[in-house]
Image (cartoon, rainbow, N blue to C red; front, side, top):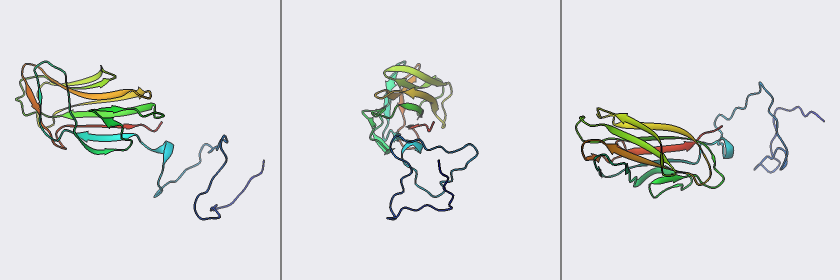
Length: 180
């Protein structure tokens, strides 16, 4: 094994520098610092797939009924993985994901409000707010997902029907793959 000591390595053509070949392992020793300040990182060190969607108009929720929220507008969807009101893990993108669901209503605070996150059609996490106010109700979860798993956001209210308020800051659903 040889040691190369230098302060700068640049590609001869000025385009791409390749370190190692397919199947090689590049080792960064303990205590070393990788400084990517100002650089664009692609591939394994990105929080993608990622999406941010919202309900643009109001939606009705029947009393004591889990109602799937119909997110009809996107801020972004990096892998086109959010469709038909659900996020589906794209092929080759299994891993740990973080999701947050938030919804708001114009109904008086005499009811229980629930934000619910479903995985593959089953409830996986819910949050209850007994006194909904301008902050609404929000639910977060971190999940280990396989290719093809899907995640949906639901609302529920006890004792009355209600209206979910639609707008970018009232009812939204975000998610992204964690860097692990």
